[in-house]
Length: 261
Length: 261
Image 1 (cartoon, rainbow over the protein chains, first blue to last red):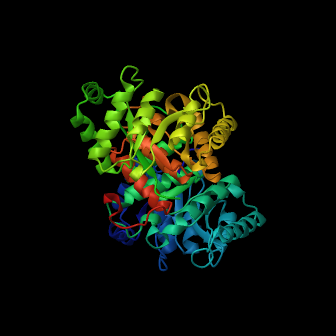
Image 2 (spheres, each protein chain N blue to C red):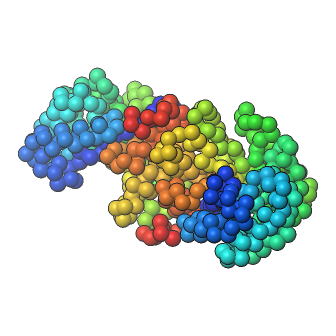
Image 3 (cartoon, chains in turn red, brown):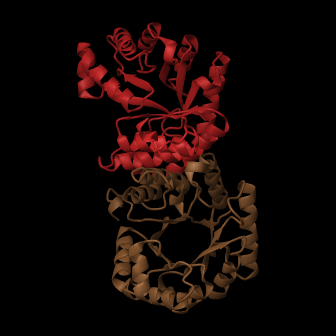
């Protein structure tokens, strides 16, 4: 397995600073967050512009060019329910450092994001869910297969579907966590790439606990074969754990300096 | 699976303070370490007196009585190559809070420690090794089976053999770590208890790195079904991770205060 791929989640319109910057098309706050995340070890940057129904295409184009022009063609994860905005973003996207990722399809209403990925040579995050939380791993696997077949009929490579097991919040679904981890192992055993919004597990927990819980979960997930996650790379404990997990899984070679690399 | 069982490793004659206290039969330093470890969440305390060829029986008796009399019959893990010392310790041991653990047998020269456990109603740590490091998990499993059969012929319950997969040092055996984790999963799938000296993985690493690496490993190991480990419970990051892993595995119920419990 290769090194774990970190997708930085912090360029997100839910953040007031980023929302204001997106509204004003003000580069500085966005580039600052980009640099912080890349310095901390992010490989991909997620760009979440929300539904952006008015000016989504213009905004996504602007953001893609801004980030790639200023950050050495950083590969991006285009995150919006606005399909035209995704197409517009891809139309100006430079593949030099990696294909764009579309975030995200599922086996329900958002299945057609796989068509969008296939038509544009993109990677697609494929959430193993249709409506709400799958009841068990058989259901997750059924959705995974539906999306896989759909993508392959459209000529995609299986490796360009990054399956998302759907991380669940512990406060409310504590007894389902081991199941999610087992599903990640199933994906690994089938040779698939995987990703997901890992910090959902600690949602609603006290702030001090979240890095501890997320770190514990990411270690388990990487051991089960998770190949990527959408996380906050500025969470130091999480990043230390990811780097250590890569060492234990022999994905990167140990050196006493490995935490600084 | 029940809550992960922490065996505190810090009453060990390799520590100059403890060695001096054992030589002088001075209670204070030993009770201080006992209290620190129990306060931090240890369930069992390991008592390592070394080979103690001269006065092992007397010393182990003294230590067992000292610790149990002063720490509410804390259950103990008797750790010495001196069999007479183990027997002497068990002769004064109070089972009220848990059987004594003999640390440890293997499938080679130390097989007879299983006999000792069987004859004394003790638990026995059973290292899945014979001479040196097993070459693969088939070899580990062969030793596991040998020790299991031996114990059962002597009337032991399988649950009283706590199989030790033999944690390996990453600096030197990085590529074997995933194998050890897979073996823990095999033990889990067979319903066995397991334990081991987990911090061996970070042996020879810089001091600041060890808690990070050990925590990452323990999260993975608990997800694979490790039921216990011999660790330093005063390592805060490690303990936070163990408690979080118990939450994720649904071994203990989440509350916002779970780290303080």
